Image (cartoon, rainbow, N blue to C red; front, side, top):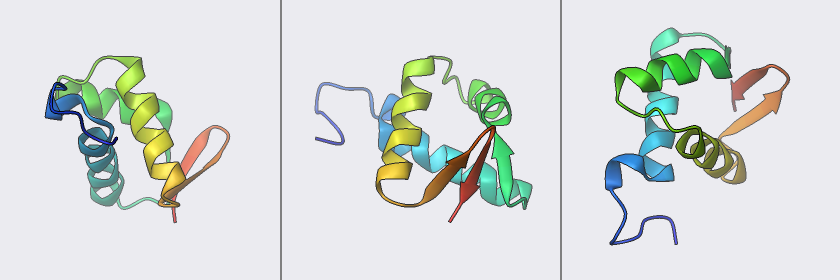
Length: 75
């Protein structure tokens, strides 16, 4: 289940993943570091590492992003 009715939508993997994709799009770079993502998400009050990891796993499982240490690439 991607979004639970008992979960805050602003901390769901889908929503946080959309914020990650929006940040990658706005930076106009091919690659971005996890630190840049975490810094940007803090501006949106997403400070839990768990939410970031679940969002990245969601995007990776949908084949939207790829990882090559230490960067994240949008496919």
